[in-house]
Length: 389
Image 1 (cartoon, one colour):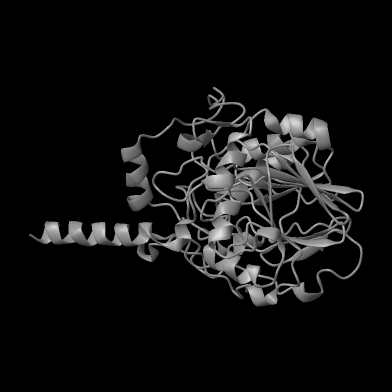
Image 2 (image 1 turned 45 degrees about the horizontal axis):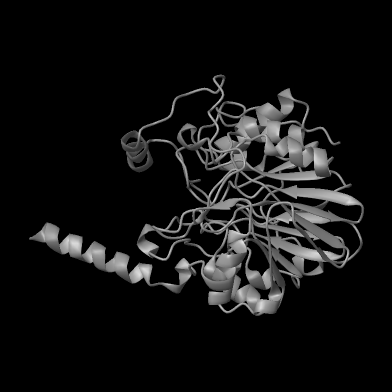
């Protein structure tokens, strides 16, 4: 009897959640017609340009079965969450737009605040502590020493979205930002969610891969990524996912969103590079989903393919979304960058910096890692390049 009651409870929660506004909108009407005109849309779904790649034979490890993955996720012994609140820097973000320099600040995970081409841009804004409509099942954000709030931000000109997964498109954050009246620039189909959430039609710009839009002195171009989309059980890949090229002030930035490693990075580099800064995902990876999330070593290779001058890793340091230790992504990335002569920027959360000033390169995360050696560094710590470009 107890099992039947539990089953009914779970079913009730699921049905209730499925009707939640947070799940977004289905693609229909004019939005569906626009998607159907895309060369990347077929049989009701968007498709990756390169298909599903086969992992290179040189990659370590093997793909795990679903059973093994679930067992490791729930019972694995790795340190997937930091034990102490992570270091944050309280930059004066309100004055972020002052001056002409291109500036960036990492606000955690894939949320970046950028000033380029005379515009202030916010990428994939997620300021909620839980990122799923069923709160009991939602991944919870790591604790920060001084959490950054929406109220800390300057006026935002453009909210730039890579795709509609919950850790990139947060309902509460979008609703709050909409009240500030920025432009929302998204891949095809994502605008349907925004319209349902009350964002005015004239504030939404949707683009297919290789399409661009100019906003004052800023040009944004949607470029391919190797990923997928979806917010519910039956809407996988019905909206497009994208990386973005940002051009302004004679400088170029690249924002990856989420992506597996694929040949598209080289093509983007040939069309738009070199880039002054590449902002690339490095986190929430696993050998089992290498098709859609890069390993740290692949992130470095993507940076090289793009012709990047400086690499800043994102998609780590906020949520436990994979099976690795929470700081493993930046540790592995540091080694691969050093081996390939790649200049890293590793700002603490909230730390702002200008592209042509000294790069933030302190390994601040090591103070929060558990296992210490006699010299005070984590036993698993690895070299990090300290060279400025």
